[in-house]
Amino acid sequence: MDSMPSIIVKLQETVIKQMQLPQGDLSIGRRRSHALVLEDAAVSADHASIFTVGQDSFLKDLDSTNGTYINKRRARKHHLKSGDEILIGNYTLIYQDDAAPPKTAQPAAIGDAALFILSGFNSGKRVELTSTVTHLGAAGQSAAFLSRSGDRFTLMTTPQAAAVLHNGKAVGVGGNLLTSGDIIEVGDTRLQFYQD
Image (cartoon, rainbow, N blue to C red; front, top):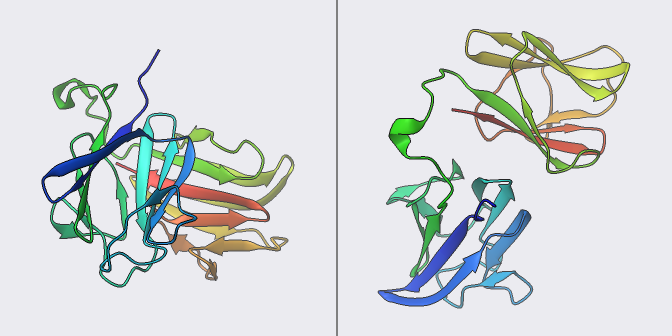
């Protein structure tokens, strides 16, 4: 069985906790209701979250005051890799995924892309984007579609689309070009676009 991704939580140089990442959201912040509470004035009440689907984990900064840093670079969204160091206030979170293959063993596929279903029907599922056109919405009732051109993906809506949002905003007339980490909402289904 695959070992689940985990994080080591350090304050300065002291390891204070090691925890497995649950499937779905792990909320991080100073507020006591969070799954991972970091008591530090430099940490926002609602600071960040790590969303895990299978062996893949994604970090998202929740518009924190002092920011979230990955390997010493400020980041809003990041697909975590084993060994990544996440700096939140005075805390360092070290991401570990023992099941990750060695970097040299990974296939050299260019432009690998997928959708992760965050909520709604089929929540937790990963959908590989291998077709030129991928329809989104209920079967037979496509509300939107992704159009692939090389390694570029464009989110387009159909005329009958009611509620399709890209990062919380309506999709433009000519479609919206997607970047890795973007959130797509189709009705009550939330998806995240990921591209290597």
